[in-house]
Length: 288
Image (cartoon, rainbow, N blue to C red):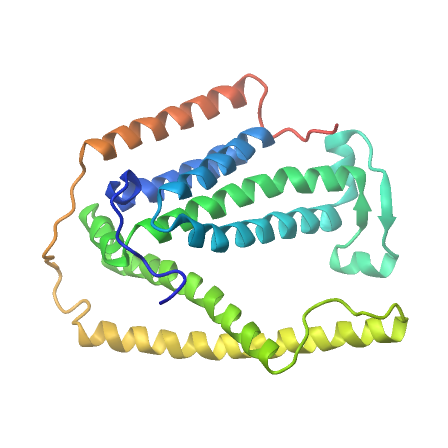
C-alpha cells in the first residue's frame, strides 16, 4: 500500500468538502505571509494536531513530521545563507556575520551565515512549514475523485481541476519514489551517513560520492515521473476525458453544515490576520 494512499475515515476531517480544505491551505499561506512569525507557528502547531483525527495518525506523523522538518530546516538555512545583507541591515538595523563566505560565493548569491540571517530564516521557515502541513492534510483526507468533482461543481475548468488533481497525486508519489530509490541504494551498500574519518580527503571523497548518488537518484526519479505521466495520460484517454462538455458523477458533492462552519472559521481567521497586521503585527523581522 502506498504511504500517501487515501484511506476513507469517519472523523470530521473526511466530511469536510475538499474545496474548504483547499481554501484553508490558501488562507493559512496568505495570513502567514502578512503577519508576524508566531502566527505561522500557531498555524503549524494546529495543523500538526489535526493529524490526530486522521486514519492511523502514527503512520501519517511518520511521513508529515520528517517532510515538515525538512521544509523547515531547508527554508531556514537557505534564507540564512542567501538573503542579501543589505536587506537584513534594513530589517534588523545591523548584520553581524558568524561565517562570512569568500567573494567568489557571492556570484551565486551566497553571502554567509549571520545572526540576523539565522533569525530571519527561522521566521520564514515557520510560514513555509505551515503551508506544507496544510497541503498534506488535503492529500490524506480527500480522495482525488472528490477533489475533481468538487472543483467542477464550483465551475472550475475541468482542465485546471484535472491538473490540480494530478499534482496532488504526483507530488506524494515522487516523494515515495525517492524513498524507494534511497532504500534500494542502501540495500546495495551505499551509506548516506557522514564520513567516519576526519581526514579531509576522506570527507571530500564521501561528499562527492553522495553528490553522485543524488544525481543518480534524480535521474531515476525523472524517468519514473515521465513514465507515470504517460500512464496518467493513457488512463485519461481510456476513460473519455473531455469526451463530453458536461461530466456526470455517481456521487454528487454539496456543501453541508460542517462546511459552512469551517468556512466561517476560515473567514474569521483571515479577518483576525488582517486586523493583527494592521495594528502592528505584520511580517516584521523579529531580532531577539
